[in-house]
Image (cartoon, rainbow, N blue to C red):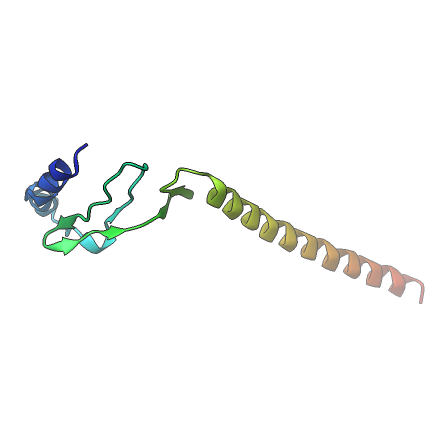
Length: 109
């Protein structure tokens, strides 16, 4: 899609009218643009007179998408999250083994 056509679509009041019909506000500050591809002109876009924030990566529904379309950030996120869960489970196991050991020691007294 050409950047001028996209900007023309963003300039149309259709989105604002649609939001008004649904009795909701359209929050331009939550909108973002990600430029993908080496030949992308990386043009700035505007909505309602406000510039749309440019990002290099975005997380949506738990999936991290980057402008270079590599999955390294997603893999790193999943690795760190699984390590946190594993650490919590190991900590619970250690405490339960310690409690069992203490109860066993009290039986021999």
